[in-house]
Length: 403
Image (tube, rainbow, N blue to C red):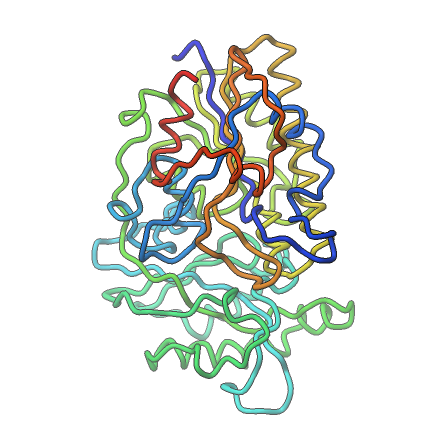
């Protein structure tokens, strides 16, 4: 076990662009972030490019990078990583697909002319979505297609002897008519259409609409890939690692890398997740035999997809005041020697409501060797610092080296 602890706090999609509504500031620069403001004066701040050239800017490729796995070598698709988290026994011949249960418009038009309203169905609960997926499974499950429950709106479809085909990400086409983004594969398209018919008048969705909530009325398949083969994080780094996340993708990466996965009750990947529970899980791991903890918070990304400036700012403030602040205060109180890396995985700008490949700001702090700086932690000052890490999968080496 290392005599120093190492921590990544990952605010998913936290980076953004200047927004007129915020006086020309980004949500990160505008938010009230006393913990990050304090740390930035003692840290190295800079930019890191997490998305390799030619690859899509997803949380899958970006978080692999942050953990030190070059996506060009290790990436085999997003859904297979989530399948590992769910515990799906994937065969080498299987293809895993993400099965979002999304909100489509419900006007009287052909299926292809509907509009995708919400990729997360109003951040529907896992409990309700599991009931909806069960209704779909009763009609559509077969030896070829197997459905598995994940978290909230995020589920998994295993296609036996399937093909890794190009499929549109639902959060990339929000507010658009879906026809041109539907699968070319006739079976997948048929299942999507049938899932809408099954779900549109399901009692749960009738009740959601009465309450003014977005219905979860259609399965959307994307993110196809084959069984992943990640090398052991501990063998690669010499450190025993723990993942703290509500999201199956991150849990799956951890499972594939042989890391521990914390169970945090009430962690749901939304704005009102159990932040305090995540901090406690991290502290418990670091106080035990774990050397490294990766705390992933999904909320800034979700609020970016929703296009909500106010809620994205709030998500960043929650990350600062309910995760980074309490975490560092507890470690300092116990006189723990630690190094902390704070960063997003990719931007999710409010303007486009989806991911981009732009470089993201990082903050690197060493409790034993604080620096004396004048900058704040945000996109502009990170760029002005002149510090730049061009290969995202090397940022973790920076965390482990001596400042």
